[in-house]
Image (cartoon, rainbow, N blue to C red; front, top):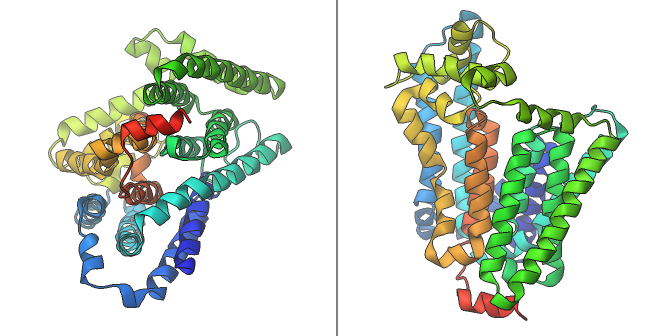
Length: 412
């Protein structure tokens, strides 16, 4: 039991390191999971395998199988890029294998052990990620927008925000110091947005903060609500002021990027001149309109959009749901939507009171990002989402206290 808990703690800490270190962290998580499965292979029986055959795992399996077949049957248009098919087949095949191993490992674990590990160790990994980001940002080694050890500067604040919000799960069941740590993590998420210059993630951070404050107020007794609102308003004002001050001291790059939003006239012409995403979406929609039923193949998305808009700076349509339609038409869109359905577990009646933050992070924030970026066209991003979602879903299997009990605890 001790060894099993040690493995869970290692996986959760590594998950908190993902925003900073990206793919190597996923490899280490897989290594720990494989060791855990082989270490307890004698405990794998029919019941464990049966637990693996439920929707939370099948939602990911169908996505991997769909896009594996998509890469297999659609020819690559650009003959100089035929290796795209081999890369896609390898990515989705390995992703399916990783899912099988992860599902087996999670089915062997106790949900309570996973819940405790997330509460105790996820903040540790996230705090380390933040410290690494802060050191790199102030060292100036990556300029005004740091990407840490990831492919681009938008990834670290995006994944940090998801995990920071989700960590508010079971908020009224944890000790005061852990509650304070969650608040600090959320404030760190705002600073991470500054480090990466992620404008849309900043909007998601502000909106998520408002939802979290509302959720805490609703879950608390009436006599504490005004105090919570005043405290949240004070902390929020200090946080935003501190972020703006930090940006000014470091050169004002983020404020300049945010100021561009004020130039938007909410007309199509204005959007096209301000953000190339509008041009990409137009090109993607043109491709979709001719191939809405079955698409053209995921490997051909860049080439097709490049033909439509006349330049090829971007790899994808910069909108996940448009990318699905380009890749495989309506069936691909359905498969992509099903991929995100495990997050709905957090809205079940028994989970809603304690795990609404998990739905907010893993469900809502991810969906908002899908509207402006093609994140799930990357196998690494899908794998990361799979690990985050399945660990929290497994932890949600614990019998949760009633709302009345939570209110009693919150007033203690």
